[in-house]
Length: 86
Image (cartoon, rainbow, N blue to C red; front, side):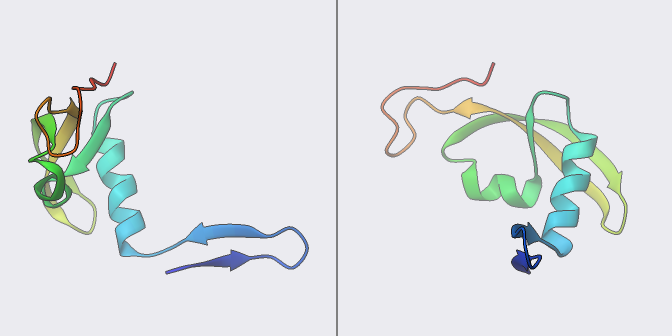
């Protein structure tokens, strides 16, 4: 769910299970890293390099595998050169 909040000073905000899950996954990952769930990783694994941080207990979700995204693969479709997260 997304929408505009306010009458005078408008703000755009997101709510819902996906937002809550993303916040919980990020809170269990490594600081300064991009961390995703295994479900999200399945969507980008062919284009990115990453490392599993293992299973963690996530409130309301049970055990969830967390993956740290390290950067783009050099030969990913549509990628000219590898880009590494620093």
